[in-house]
Image (cartoon, rainbow, N blue to C red; front, side, top):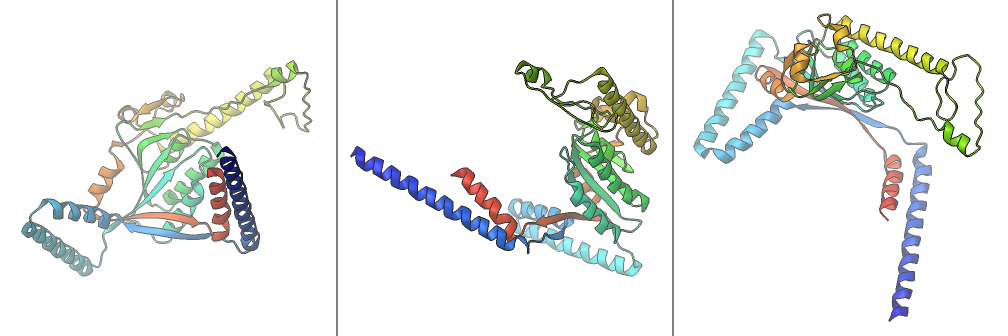
Length: 331
């Protein structure tokens, strides 16, 4: 019996190995074949939030009201929409449009690649009476990345497009750098706001290398081509240089914020601290305490709301190797 189990185990192991090898080869071949043809497929997704809210309301009413009352509400809603369309046609005007964007920031502000496409698309169609609402969530990250994200939002301001930024959870450091570009900042009562500061940190293993008699050499041309390093022995001169660069970056950060929110006591809030929404309101870091949901629900009564997102879809050649990798990781 034991020999039978051992033989079965060996057979099963060989079978799995062969299957993995075949799938790996197929994935590699497919990747090579389609690599030259692979192109990013992208498109702009637009959805009506008014319709979304109406569907939610109708679904609840259908389940909680009598059939007679539900039919009355549906009829009243149809009549109201017809009346509004007639009024728009008669006055030759359209409802205000609110375009809703979303930005979930990581340390590299990777979403800026999508944000720039969304804003480029909007700038081709927005009018003076329209508004852009950005739902922002970010704890900050790389200076140059968030600087670019803020510059993308600045494009809207330069075209006199009303920009509102809603912070439901956090807009700190680079996240607040983006937020301060807006005409108006709204925040949830416990949203984290601020952290107007700059930080740099890295480990240093020079002592560990010395303990194991490992030499480390670094050759540069230019006095400050390299300052602090991970493996070399850092000096006070190099630390002072990095500290100077951080101070300069901090000054740029403060100047950028105060130019866009002139009511701020910048020296009071640019300490690197953060505050929750209610305290941030007292410090003029935000303009109103309100969630993005409340803001949009209120706006839906008089405006047409459209959620806009730019999506990049992977081709088959791009998806197949990732699928094979995922399968192998599970095996």
